[in-house]
Amino acid sequence: MSDSTLPLAGKKGLIVGVANDRSIAWGCARAARDQGADLVLSCLNEKAVRYVAPLAEQVDAPLHTCDVEKAGDLEALVARAAEHLGRIDFVVHSIAWAPLEDLHGQVIDSSSTGFARAMEVSCHSFATLAKLCAPHMSAGGSMVTMSYLGADEAVPHYGLMGPVKAALESLVRYMAMELGPRGIRVHAVSPGPILTRAASGIAAFDELMESAIRKAPLGRLVTLEEIAQLSTFLCSDASSGMTGQTIYVDGGCHAVA
Image (cartoon, rainbow, N blue to C red; front, top):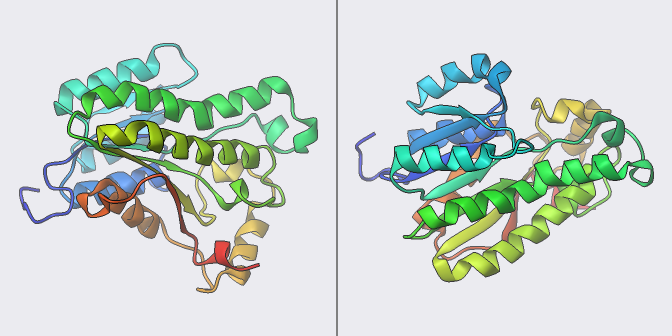
């Protein structure tokens, strides 16, 4: 990891939301470490630790629990990350959640409480994370979150998460405007459907994946590695002239009707 030619050599990163070895956050962590970064990882709670701790060991990263709905958890995570790393050069935010009873129903039937919780966990937590991390990014850096095509189009069965992800993509643009003068770039990565723990909560997800394969010009689903490579590019100096974008890695689904 001492090879100075690696794209993320010397970079320090916080990756939030590792759930297991199929999660996008884990793909990003593995790719970032392979590219030379030093990392701190988080998972939801102690129950998740037994799945994530072996992964954290693989990338030589401290692991902390963080439930963004618990007061003080994000603050404690960022403080520990900054203490361990010395500074923060990039942040990957890969968490999303909605109550199943709201996610599986019509958007017009969603409860105000469920909608608000989905928005807090999946969207506003990125703004809070940015506020906490920015003071530790004095040399600038990059912040990346995860979206989906359902933010821009009405996708069957995606339900409540569509409006929430639309808000997240708007948040990215405003954060880019506000943090740009500090040299901090902000992006949303919009992957095609991939079978993660979070995705398993979406009704008829198999149908969604089959539809993506039929629609995609590449004729296939994207891989965890492809999502991670785009994310780590956005965390590297190679993307220094870019900010405020939602960038698709979905086999071209977004480009065709």
